Every structure is written in C-alpha cells, then in structure tokens.
Amino acid sequence: MSRTHPSPPLRPPRVVVVGAGVGGLAAAALLAHEGLDVQLLERADGPGGKMQPVELGPLRLDGGPTVLTMRWVFDALFERLGESLDRHVHLQRCDVLARHAWNADERLDLHADLAQSLAAIAAFSGPAEAARYEAFCTRSAQVYATLDRPFMRSARPTPLSLTWRVLRQQGLPGLRQLLRISPFSTLWQVLGSYFHDPRLRQLFGRYATYCGSSPFEAPATLMLVAHVEREAVWQIEGGMARLAQALVRCGQQQGVRLRCNAEVKRLLVQDGRISGVALADGETLAADAVVFNGDARALTTGLLGPDAPQDLAHGQPSLSALTWHAEVEASGFELSHHNVFFGPAQGYRAEFEAIAAGSLPASPTVYVCAQDRSGQARAPRPGPRRPERLMCLVNAPADAHGRGLTHEEIARCEAQMWGRLREAGLRVTLSGPPRLTRPQDFAQRFPGSQGALYGPASQGWRASFQARPAGRTSLPGLYLAGGSVHPGPGVPMAALSGQLAAEQVLAGLASTSRSRLVAMPGGMSTR
Figure 1: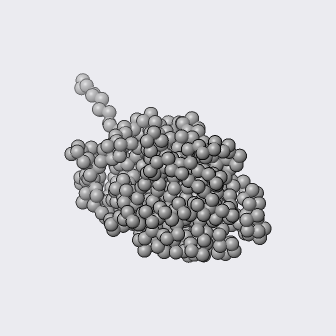
Figure 2: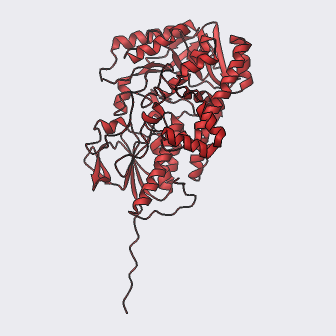
Figure 3: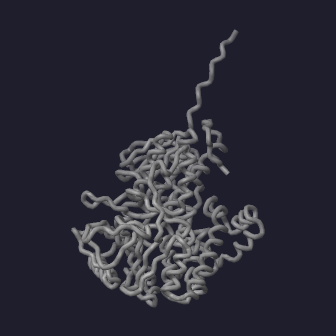
C-alpha cells in the first residue's frame, strides 16, 4: 500500500512596496491584511513622505500637509484593517476653514458652517455676493457627488468609461450632472460666472493650487475642492506625522516589514514580468508584485533601471514651493490655523504667469500655517509675545531643468513675503533663522519629481484622463500609487491610490494563479 505524502504548503505571494508615503503605507497594510508577505522600503530615514515633519531644534513642524480632509477615506481604511482612526489619532474639526487677508482692512473668514460664511461674505462683499456663494456651494457639491465614486474611487477612466460608470451608478440624473460640470472651461472662467467681487474669484481660484495648478489653466471640475474643504477640515493633535505613524503601526500589526534607509535602484524583470528589486547596497529582493509609491516620472527617466515601463502618462510638472519653518513671536493680526495673505486681485494672473515662465512671482500670495493655533472659532489666544511655530509658503516653479533658484531670487522673494504679511498687519519677530526648503530640495528628496509637489499639473479637460498614469502598468506585476498617479495629489487621494493599487495587485495575482492567496476575514473587494 503506497503512502501519500501531504503537499508542502504554498508560500503567500511576496510583494515589495517602494516608498512609505501615505499611498505606500495604505497599500502595504491592506495587502498584508489579505495575508500577503509585504516588505515596505523607504529611502529616507523615516516613513511619511511629504508628511515627514521638519525639525527645528527641539521643535517639530508639519513639513507638507497641515490638515486632513475627506476623513471618510481614513475611517474606511482603518476599519478594513480592523482598527479605528480615533483610537490612533486625536482629530479636532476646524470651525474656521481659513482666514484670508488682502490688507489690514480687508479680511474674510470662511467657516465650516454655511450660514456663518454667508454672513461673513455678505458683510465683506454684500448680500448679492453671499447669494452667489451659496449657489457656488451647491454647484461644487454636485460636481463632487458626480465624480466621487466613478472617478476618484475607481481605476483611471476614459471619457467613455466615466460616462458609463456615472450612468450605471447614478442613472440619468447623474449623466445630466456629468454633462453640466463644464469640462471645457477653466476654473477661473467658471468662477467669473459666480463671483463679481474679484477678491472672491481670487480666493476660490487659489483652490487650484491645492492640486499644484494655475486656476487660469485648471479645469472647472476643481471647484469640487471647495466642497471637500467645506465638508470638514480636521487638525490632528501632534501634527500630520501622527497619521503616518498610525498607518505604520497598523501595517506592522498586519505583518508589514518596514525598512528605512533602503533605496531601490532597479526593478528586476524575468520572463517579461516583475521579479523583484535591487537595492543601492547590492541586495536583491524577490517579489511576485511591486507597488511603486514614488513619482511616476522616476520610472520613465530611468531612475529605476532600463526595464521600467516607458509608456506612462505624465503632463507638465505641477507647482513647487518655497517654505520657511520658524519659531516666532507674532502680533498685530489674529492668526487662525490656516491663513492666506493675498496681493491685489488685479495682479493675480501675473503670479501664475511668472511661475509658468520659471520665475518666482513678484507679488506672491503667502500661505501661513500657525501650527500652535486652533481652527476653532473661540480658540484661546496664545499669551502675549508667546513664541509659536509658523510655516510660510509661497508657490514656486518646479525645478524642471535642474538649475535651481539662486540665493538672490530667494532673498528677494523672502523680503516680498514678509512685506506682504506686514501689509496685512502681521508683525513677526523670528526667534532664530528659519528653515528654508527650496524646489531643488524637494527634487532631491523625491527622485523624478523635478521638485513638483503634486505630480503633473491639471491643465485642460484632458488632464483628468491623460496627465496621470493608472495604477496598473504595462509591465506585469508592477503597480503604481502616490500623488503623481490617478486619482491625484493630496493625503486622501494618495491613500485612495494605495487602495486601488492593492486591489489591482490582488486581482493580478489571482489571475496568474502563481501562488495561493491566504483567505483572511474581512477581506477587501477586488472590484
């Protein structure tokens, strides 16, 4: 009688995720939750990507994103991992979305509460303009509702597939809304049909910069950013890095193995599909799939070797920035958490024309994050002359040609920045030299990005379909995540890209049947 030997257990599929920004963190945690063997590699000395904090002596300041929107993305992500977002981070909803100033006498707060914003705009620009703002809010909410599931939460569509998805998910009413979203108009043009006060057109036009684009070139669909922000803006106690740390902890609990100071130099390919990665120190790691959570341009420019796909879509690089992080004593202007200081509305176009020409603007808009201030309407004031942490940001051109901004250019821009704050009544006394970050510094930190902070810019209606590559590439086994790919830049959108990449990895591995997927409770849909 012959003896039957049990078959050896099949190993779980091996996945390497390159880049521990929020997209990579999300993809790694979800894949590990599904039972895959996941290694997460990060070339920097810590995870977080653009959420890594800036250290200023003993102080830690947000280095990139400063607040969280689209909280539901992270509530759903942590729930899939068997966790709760609230168990890991403390969130406080902002009553004041942003404080805006044009000079010492022209100030406007936008509020989470619509009635408060209507009253503020009526006092600032008149009741008719407040009514137009209410109509704008209704329209931006409709655009968001139309594009949420069929575009932002789905693999990159074509115009035809987007139409089909909207029709299938929302029926004829959704299709009528899709036809009304003004895809062939720029954001600036559509804002002109709503706002007669040029300052309000300037204020809402700035929302295009949240995606690294000019309002004079960006599609009108970016009005949905106004709805996302009005829906809810959240501060994270301890800064945005706490969110990255929470995702790291959850991923490691699922089995993710995180390695920092591990730079990937080459993708390995065998028999026409991905087989692993080679590190800068010569080590090689085998993989059945690789998720690249970096700038997609790094692949097409050969930074990961000759076998990387060359057919990835990417448009012109988005905006970069000059940022100054400092400890200061501030007075004369009551700062909120988010503050925007504008120049004259008639000079707004010149700001973006200068950036498009590769120069710093002569009259820049200045964003100031007062990191020790709350976005609450009745937040207590810091004590008199109490030091606090500020981040100041001015939009700048990407370092597309590698020349970098000169010391003279930066010094002139910095002087203009402090002058803009003084014009609004804000007096700032520095406790020490600020920490400056330039476009060339961002280019060095994020290879292939050319210093652009948001991937490719959104220019024209085709940008939604052509400027950003999809998560699945033409090289079998290689997938993309991060702000340079679909659905776009920003913390929640990058997290969605990581989720989409994880779903595509699972679908790809299931179709090849190279190894057995381990069944786990609470599994993730691969639709």
